[in-house]
Image (tube, rainbow, N blue to C red):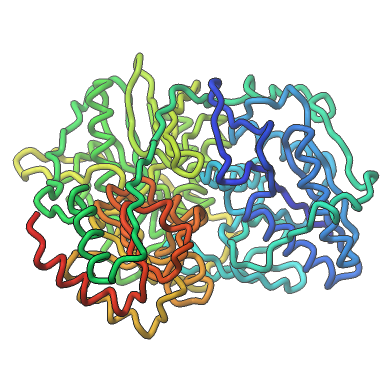
Amino acid sequence: MRIAVLIKQVPAIEEMALGPDGRLIRSGSELEMSAYCRRAVSKAVELASQRSDCSVTVYTLGPPSAEDALREAVAWGLDRDVGIDAVLITDPAFAGSDTLATARAAAAALTQDGPFDLVLCGKSSVDADTGQVPPQIAELLDLPFAAAVKELRLDGEHLSLGCELDDQWLDCEIALPAVLSCAERLCEPSKVSPSGRALAPAERIRFVDAETLGSGPWGQAGSPTRVGKTRLLAVDRERYVESGLALAEQVRRAVRVIADKGGFDHSKKPTEPKLVTSPGGPGGVVAVLAEPGRDKLLRELLGAASLLAGEINGSTAVLLPSSMGSSPAEPAIDAEFLAAYGADHIVHLHGAAIEEDVAAGLATWAADRLPWAILAPGTSAGREIASRVAADLGAGLAGDAVEFDVEDGRLVAWKSAFGSQLIVAVHTSTAVQLATVRAGVLPTPEALEPDRRKIPAEEQIEVRPRGRVKVTARRRDDDIDVLAGASTVIAVGRGVDPSDYPKLDPLAGLLDAELACTRKVTDNGWMPHARQIGITGRSVSPRLFVMIGASGNFNHTVGVRGALSVLAITNDPEAPAWEHADAGIVGDWREVLPLLLTEIENLDV
């Protein structure tokens, strides 16, 4: 059995920065293997250690400095008596590669060295977090794919998988060969000290240049997207904390600081915008991929599609899969609902219930109709489908967009990057422009009045299922829309025992808050992954974010850079939380809570 692992070297999250050309600055920064990639390496080595006929080859695309990440992977495998080698795909010609150009180079290297029985990747890289490269590689290699694998069992030529997807759990079976992306909790991460990496034999690493892989085009020349303008999201926190004061006085002053920033101001509740109907003109079609069971996100996408269609004198279309990811208890999306939110056209993808089948149907339709743009949900399913379609069509894809513009008749997708430290404008050069959209970041429009609704035209496309991925069970344990739309979020750390969560109900009720958590909490299974805030979790932008019993390290607080105000409560006077909060209270949260409730109730805002 042959296993390939694809890894990425990234700057340590605290040091990420962007140069004037829109590219990540790597020189002079501390570099490391991306967090999810460490699980891919570790799992590959674990599987290889269980079979005498198994070998592992680790690949990365990057500058010469990426050799260090490969050395770490090789050292990890050799320490466990596994046959392991590495390939560094490096050449100045690869500079400026977007996700599709990266996937093409990786797929070319895998094809030359293959065939491989299993290809493991990280779920995404922490510097971009789009999750596009793994499914694009799967599409280019014509292989089945499963995302965010948290449980893996190899039985002969079949894999039984448990996948942690957004706010749901999926059990499925896949026949080899296949491509998988690894969740953070799949296994222990591969970590080797610098001295251990230095011991990895140099002959274990092979170098591959652009000429070896073929004519390309590679790098920026082969990239259908480019980065344009950037906007820094500077965060200026008050960092007010006085641990020497009596607890009641700390609470009083902290509440005043948060109040002065507007953290308790409920008067500014967002109102649903009126839906702007598309003109239904000939300027182009803005298509939306519907994911059953996510009506709020679908409304957001339709609202954006209608606005964009108005900019280009175009029309809107909705691509509606059979039942992808939906529960039998959930009502089907019908034409009346879609008409109420501005759909001009409905395309039914019959037989498409698995992501790769939905992607095949969507790609066939797009190749024939050449829509101006396709907007897809920024969910696990939406990312796989959009990534596969982009790879199939050779089209540009902007991941995790948070807003849109139109310039010179072309789509500009703004996306968050580098731990939410900035947003960047992504432009595409292809006829069909694709974007995935993060849940909760676009306005949710009101439905049209019945007398303003158009009767959508409908068409049917039959999709022949490949049958390569068999879903055996699916359950939803949360809703990603909840945190995305919350005005106040209370995040608990390991300092709050799960048996004490009900004690937070009065505060949550007073603030109309949703509960979230740190990674350590989800690691212990105390809350679902959809509630995790941070670099390997979710990013939120509430009016008020309250940390309770959490150390407040950067990997957690980076997920709340968009919050208007941050209040931290922990008993550690040296906690990093104070650097990322507007106000802090040093003390036992159980003692703080009643004082905080009284102070907020008596607050005159």
